[in-house]
Image (cartoon, rainbow, N blue to C red):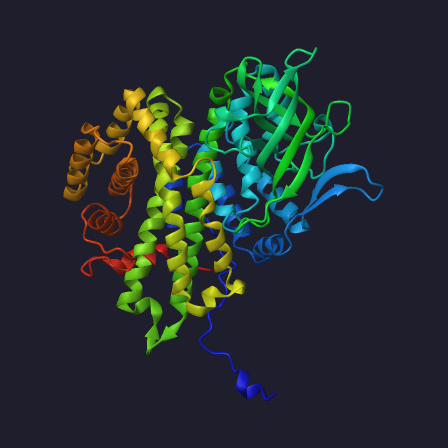
Length: 545
């Protein structure tokens, strides 16, 4: 065929060869803001190094390969022996190895550890989101294990290691391990107190044998799992290792891998316990209280992970519009496209600023900040994860038909987008969790209102929204039925407060006018035309070097 029929014009170069961290102004500014000066140079350097890796051709290839060739379950070896192993593409291991070596499972013991890790998680999972699951659970297992000093002393150095070793071996013979979690059972995932998995004590101190089934167990090739089971004293938390201290395999029968909408690179499974050896974590009957800190930490990662997906979607949309021409000019210069891009950029920046504020609260770790997190984490988890899917869908549309093609990477982002809204409790669970905090922990509401109040007087639309929120909080009639409405408003007011304090005026002005002032439509691209939208878009656009 004649080459003249295939002259390629007006196609956008791939967004590669750039520093994902440095190109994200909202994120880099948050790191500057929340990390003390003595630690900042080291943190900035490590995040820039990770950002350059995340924006490389190699990392993007790893992400595509890990999803195009998803994990495969091997229940038996060639001789018929039960092995219950999951085989991953080598790129999955490369992604995990790079993440672990960058400290993405180490937040609890280093200066500004949570902000550094959250920023790194936001940067690196833009290359591939699926492997974020074992990273998140490994990181989040630490506070639960700390309820038992002996277990913490044994496992924490391995969980926070910077060395990734694939394969199942005795944990003491590995330089680093990964953890998973198993709470959901066949009868339902939210009401864990109805779990039927049994735990029977045996002669060893704190040792039990488990019998039952877990309906969702992600990353089943992890070295250990925190699970809930019914002990004689009630629902209790347990540590289940895949390999026992003597080197033999624990009973951990993987029944099947889930065929999911997205998150294809990550193996999610059903597992059967039948005399499975476990060690008790915390006291009998206090399983929820023991594991709740792990749940809170993974909920924060849902917020960070959604912010990462939104940021990558906005980066792709603004990059495409910078290079694509239509009707005599670049898309980014067209007023209507600029409105759409600016609207998406506002949502992305608000998510990032909120996620990093929550991470900083973990680092500060005062009574005030702990009370703030009690409401702010479920409220942020509710709202930010819900906004992810429409943001990614609109960003895909900015690329037109090219965005609907797998090679663009946008379909993978869109399939991934709903996950964080479901994982660790869907929207209703988060909204009701906020209500419980409001009703049982008045200090949590006080801390939330003090945080929001730090921006009072800076924007009249924010002030009006705070006043309206106080009115809603004072009316308890029908509170459960309107919990989503209330929590949405709380999240928006919190985001508005943070942006008014820390974002450029053009960003906070547009956010307050639309999200709080009501000057907005029901679709993206309906911002008031009088705003400085060009500056908002320019701030969001990544620059590939």
